Length: 124
Image 1: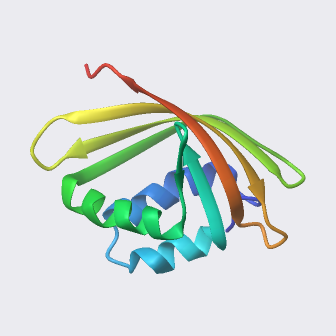
Image 2: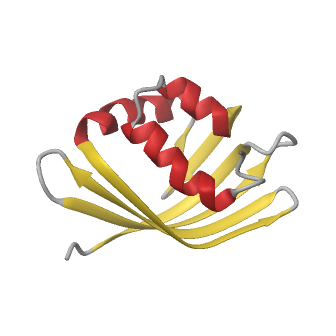
Image 3: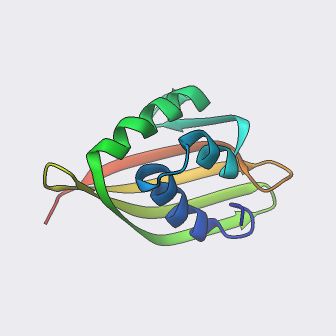
């Protein structure tokens, strides 16, 4: 499974595997992304190392994740998605983010680059 063959599945699986799984975060990242993958999230550039630095503490903070995919489109090497990610926190409470993602795929179907805009939704 790659983002090209199942974008909605990737949007659901990747956060679970990266944020809650026991597998090495680098292995999970490399399964779905090219080695030169870059994510621009709300204007902040995250390369592979910065993403790995983000995953490790996220595993300590989250105890549950839910992803609801509203739209997921693939057209050639371009992808677009709109989805919500809800994280249940170890110390209590939840954070729900609405995410708009646009990306570029590599020949092998993995993500090469993505740009995301997010907004936090009120809990309730």
